[in-house]
Image (cartoon, rainbow, N blue to C red; front, side, top):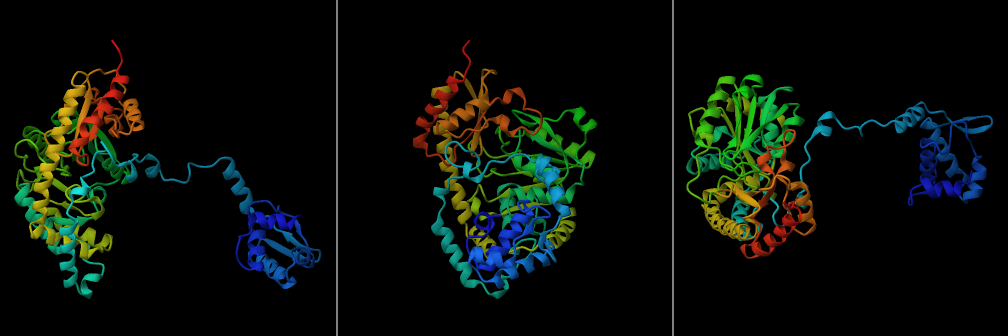
Length: 486
């Protein structure tokens, strides 16, 4: 036994001599390098070999005895047979699926935050246009007012002033019917979805989700143990059939009616009314994700489904990630009035909240009119960028692609006229060329997406209008290389 080599391999690089000897021997025993029955050298021999005090060696041996890794008898110190050793060897020979739960193994892959940058990554606002000066001034005013009471965990339902400001904003801008008691502050859309899945459905319940649709919603529902069913989307949004309502009635229905993600369609008023009517008949709640409804480029926006009727069976979700900036990490859920009390109890017992100061800053930003000023400016910016993108797409791709969902929001869908064009291959090749354009098929929430959605998602909010032409030229070149010749 070459103890010098053993310690060089298994002992920590730093620490006292007795600690290095103890940990090195223990590691070698646990990983099987020193097998059961191995007789360790006498303490005097080790001390001489390693040039350390004999008491140092005795300390290390005593620690190993205390841990049950070795025993001492008249002949010396012997490595014990460890029951766990055989079990560990067996597991190594036939390992389970990485120890992950079924929920974790089944979850839908989401893009990394580092991937959400550059043209034409969807879902990212123009962060360079945000007025950090206005935000900083608002923040400074609020921090001058703060006392010890605002430095604690805060109201788990959310800062009351922010809840009231959101309710006022939704009534004025989205035609919502709500008051502050129905508004619950969350850490963003994903947090809101997890709350809805936990509060309004039981494990095994059916939830409908648009196909193609938002992968984050699919992940939240699967993690909650719900049975997610992808319902096809056409140009007017989600399109459930009569047999869907009869054969697999849902407990929850997730939709993005103002600007369907990712196809960009706007759910027609007829379908909105039909969806609410059927949902009421089967006892379902509609989750209305209004993630970018503030940005409408053609005509006035349709009002939120939540406000179409008094007490509509709608859970309304909103976020400031698209309106302001993602790092703010503030979203909200608006519940029907008859459910607000129960949700208050659930949220109050579920977790403690903090970030009171940030919520107070956001409330003041809204009350002072800064939010509305910012939104008006961004509507002009996004409309100009959308127009520049449309001009470039029509110029370079009119013969091979069609455009969908350009009337609102921060992205549009580009679909291939030739069904043989492989969107996933185009997306990968475009990324290699420096253009991020996810395939619509990557947003499948069922086995594949409807054939009409063979194409790409193009986010334009963060792309300067002057850059659209060269970027689209690059994308067009990639698409034409992957379009089959007749």
